[in-house]
Length: 139
Length: 368
Image 1 (cartoon, each protein chain N blue to C red):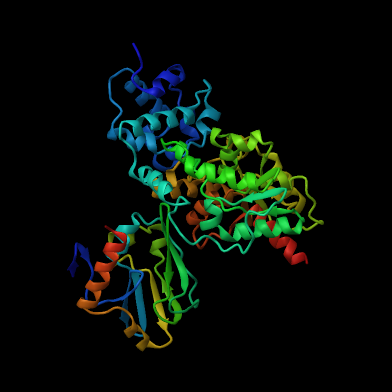
Image 2: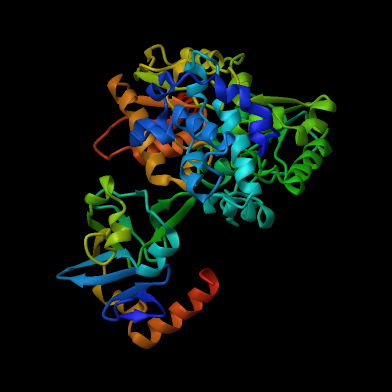
């Protein structure tokens, strides 16, 4: 969904630091959204944790870097890492070129699948949050 | 005819010394990562001669070639004619900035340092839980990389200095701002004077820093002359540790060492880090290129900020040499080198990349 010049699909859940989350069977897939990848610039490094690493909602479990910028990736829910996108090791720029597709970053096994409902969801909520962050970071 | 640009006034003869031999190409990290002749010293000298001769102007078209250089000095080291390419590049960058042609990352960096205390524009430095500004004989100057990127190495340095019973204090430091001169601007006098004031207020006779770039800046730039004039000695931590004893701690791991450009080629500090490493790592091996021939990690001269993909590609090339030694551990004395080399490392590559001080501190803690 085009929103204020950014591609922000409204069928996804969003973690407040601009990571999208999508249920896929028993797992959740997570990646960076279009607003964040454009603000970050050319991604050159993604920290890929080992499978099984415990993650906690709101706590940093990985980092992403471009140039001088370093972004912390916080857990959107409690759970553990089920898989990482190993393509990002050699080609972290996939996050820039296809952030919702080939640039997916992590697959998470949630401790409580219902916890995803605490994330930002729905066109109205996404637009309000995005508008505030455009004002804060991109204006 | 009067030279149009400052770089030509200062360095015309040097630029004309370039004999186009291409020896620089063999050691240039930018060329090694991209295979683009305009990015290595010979290409840059060719273009600057064209500018001097009035054939082409300094313009935005030259941003990519003039601002994509780590200023590592390998070209100068390898040049049979002795052309000091980094100096020429920095002067040309100043002229570029003067005419309004500058890489946006560097314009941005100058703006960031006019508004913030660090190059990252971040507001949450490492919590070092230490008093600042106390009267003490030593000051430990952390630097931006140590505060915002390599916090574990900083914590280790502080722990090690405690262990050696060094009476030191931190200060309310800000970015040394040395990098600005590399990328066409001047040191930020607001920042430099804050650092000078903070250090002098402690009464310290020596400043120790783990950052080779801060070391070069505090030790060599005119803005920090008041420190030197007050008799304050500036030391890189490797110089301080070379004379210390570490109670015979030792590792059986195979260790190699990467000479940071800012410590090695630019400051001539090669043996002190090795003197320390040999005390605790008897199984030490050199990489194929070491000492003055060391390959650059790719992060200097503003390259990491402006050309991050190529910067990490340069780091991959250097890491390949470390992997070829089959060392378990790659030590170095520069946080920026640790950071860039770590970004280049794949998960399948089992070499550990770590600051010498951090590794040594771990050995000492394990021995307790």
